[in-house]
Length: 321
Image (cartoon, rainbow, N blue to C red; front, side, top):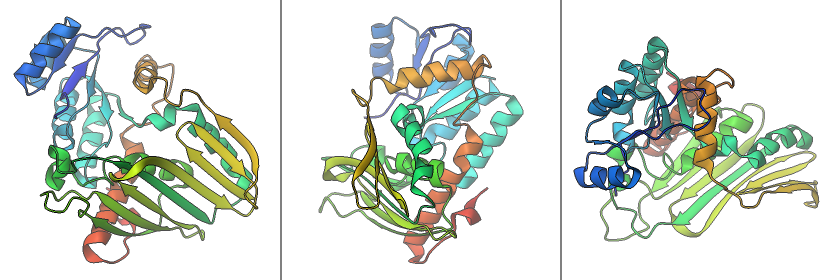
């Protein structure tokens, strides 16, 4: 199923609640259904939407291969963008809209919801308690019954497979907490569904190395159940584990020293991010997830895919645009 190319929520940026003002999709049937459900006008091109509605900002939740097109159209129209991750599919694609947004003077914020979750921000504060990290282990898996379905099964359209899609969240945490690695060695596979045709990897394993002596790995799979999401960072004074809705500080022997649990784990992430973006636009809050912040993510992905192709380590910093 395709996702809507753009949803607009114009209002005065300082307004408490944005006004939902229009929907856009390349599928006219879906446009009609969504427009009727929300009682707003519908459009089949983002250019028509921008001209007719003149929104304050657009929520771009689109297939990866059309993200740059939507961002470019919005920037040229002077319309701010709240964009679903990933920011871009490669460093070259990332550099162009980043520069365009800067020239146009518009804000673009990428939706990485963990940065707006109190458990993940608390983890950042607890990280210093373990000392200089020497080991990091990340895992994000769930079972997708059909890895070939839609554009996500085609590497050219998705810009990659599970690593670029769901793995983007794990990469974001890694870069947020520890910075960009100095070396990655990656392997990918599209073998979880024999007899099914798709070329976007369903499973990826990335080994990491930092000049500081920190080593580790990330395992991502959209075919291996049960659903799990975990990042563990170990230093001489203990281990910090971050899972969905919970963070734990463990002592060197593995005993719990401190923990935080949030229930429900995910109340309603989109509302939190939309509210933050409104505050970014009215100048009362900084943009925590702008284009410049996501250039390292695209460099990490480019290095990982280059490593998987050449069977050699790659330095993500060499891929920074």
